[in-house]
Length: 113
Image 1 (cartoon, rainbow, N blue to C red):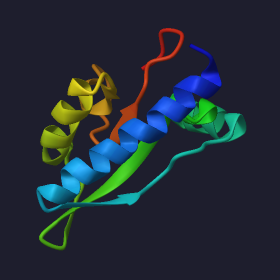
Image 2: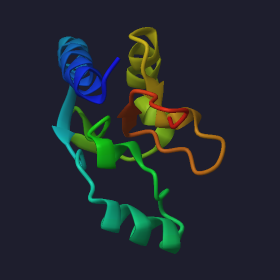
Image 3: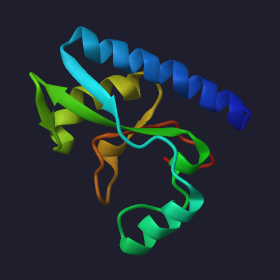
Image 4: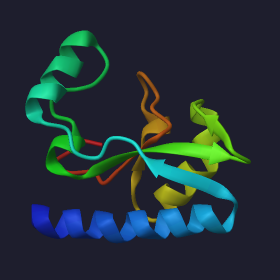
C-alpha cells in the first residue's frame, strides 16, 4: 500500500471512529494531526515524542475527548475509543510501553506505531 493510500485509509477509519464515539456520547475535537519533521525532532529532544512520528507522514491523529462536557486527559479515559480503534486495525497510543498516549490514534507504517 502506498503512503497516499494509507493516508486515505486513515481518513476513512478516523471518520468511523468519530461516528462511533458520537453515538456513545463521547465528543471529540482534533488535537494535533500534522507535525513537521522539525517539530518532531524538537519533541524528541525534549523527551515528549519521537523524531519519526507518524504525524509527520499524516498517519496519526491526536484527539481531545469530552464526556458530559468535561475534558478528559487520562489514557484510561480513552480506553473504549482505543479498543474500537484497534478493532478497525489501528494502533492506539494507550498501548505504548513507554509514555502511554491515550489520545493518539495511528496506522502503523514501516514498523512505526
